[in-house]
Length: 203
Image (cartoon, rainbow, N blue to C red; front, side, top):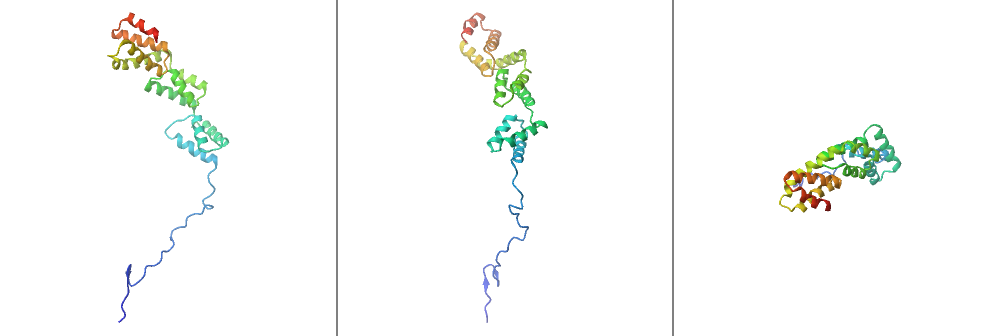
């Protein structure tokens, strides 16, 4: 009697060879169409970078240059974005001043420096920092000193003055304003005015 052969993958029959995928064949490179041109690439990059985060024209131009987009294509796209309001350096500068002054207490000088590094035009910077007048700047400096004052208690007088004035200087406040605000705060805390006069001129 003939014995039935038992195949490993099933009784009585060998495994069929793999068939080609019966689904739709993938498109060839030619069928997919030409690759996107530089302007299309630039537009996609700018839209991605602008999603949720305003940026200046210079920031976007630098990003396009880093990604190898030719300058003529980059400038064409950037100008188009400006025309439709997707790039607005004036609005960017105004929002930057408002945000950074209230969140970080930065003075006009520091804000102008930050905006210059982002490529904002000098005239637009002047208009933006002009939102802050001298009185507002001094009030903010006073609030900064009042918040820091408690942390300096226990230090000698000269160290306190230097630390408080240095904090304001790093935020862009002028030396004269910084010393005036620090002196007023220390006098209100009970420091002797004559002793303060002895230390302040050396700063």
